[in-house]
Amino acid sequence: MIVLCTGIIRSGSTWSFNVARLLLARGATAVRGEFSNKIRTAIRHGVAARVEHHVIKAHEPDRFGKRMIAEGRCRTICTYRDPLDCIASGIEAFGETFEDMVTLTRRHLELLKLQREAGGVHFVWYDDIVERPHERIRAIADYLGQSVDEYEVRRISRSMDRDSVSRLVKELPTAPADGKSRQQSWDPETLFHPGHIRERPRTAAELLTSQQMRYAVGQLAEFVDANGALREPFKAIGRLQRLGAA
Image (tube, rainbow, N blue to C red):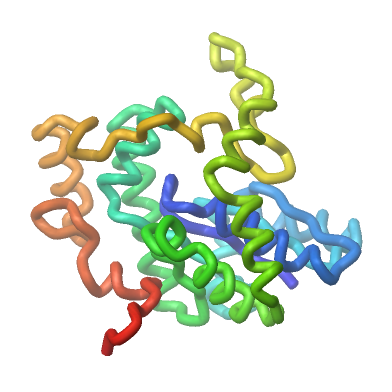
């Protein structure tokens, strides 16, 4: 099985990547997980290595990857979040510039739109990862055709919670101050980075100026309302229904 884990930057795609990887690893002898936007090349290497399941995280999959999504030739899990929060989180977590984060977020929203139109994609709303991780894991397991009991759900959830990830990233090497070897800070198995865990993440309202907020809203107007929140047709695609909701 080929699984693409896409999503807006800083919306939980690393979490979904690991959930998919751990679910599939339970009953398989060869599971490959990696980050690559070059989907054709990644799959070719996976075939050569005779992997049973191949989980690929890709924020900007190549034309081949987009065609696979559109034609339903892979399983795709796409995470998303209110764009201004993604922008603020990218600045704070990875030191990206405001302008670059707006550009990245715009491109990732366009991919979100493409996936929504393609159908067959499993969308994951970020707030559900934070507030209802067990339900989200069960939903992903169903999408991947994996039967999972409550013990397994709890085990996977614990391995991906804040405390567990915090312990993991504390053991990672620190990137050089010149930033030339930034990739050394990423865990090659889980793809977590020290920036994924911060003591007190700031919100967009705390981090961005009013001028920056207006600029971002203007650049993302197709996808957000006047306050910068994701428009409802997009926000609704992957939210778990609350009990008692219609």
